Image: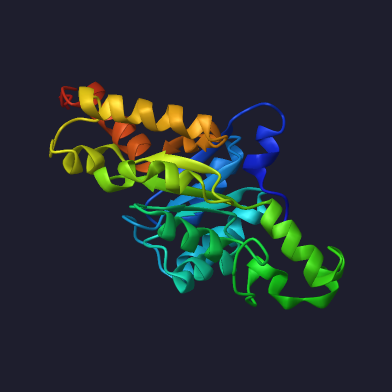
Length: 251
């Protein structure tokens, strides 16, 4: 393991560059490294990833010096632990609505005493390699290293989450709040409304102000993210628009 490259970039006073993936492709991870990205983010809620996919992506990302973060499907401890055991260094939890859920999220992401993360035997704990762990000062040192390089985000996507925001923000170990504009709009009574609907914009502004007042950040503070699906759609649409009317040359 190595220090979280997002946090390392932040310590230079800059946002990190992250490539968002919703499907597994290790070549794209290599391309991102060549392009100068700092990290890769996997969408485990809506994307198509199994544990083997995650393992391979983190393997390639780490080989190129990129940290990997992920939005997980849910906050069950065994699910989060499966991602952390692969070597993921940041977790975003969707649909957080209560302080209890936030506490469960933090417990799953951090080792004791801050949390209750289970010690595994994968890349996330140096494969239990005693020689590697010794370089951190043994298991206690590695546990501190892992906690120091973990990012924990809670995504607010409902009226209930908004109503409980102050209690959510009070949980120690939570680093940032992430927005979920489409689901939030539906929960506020505006299903199908765009993210720039005035009430969604107002709620987001209030969430941000209260989050910063609590001494925490918004997830977008940490990294600028380019989603691979958007890049592909934009590029192929531009190509199609440019070449759609090219004539078929005569012989």
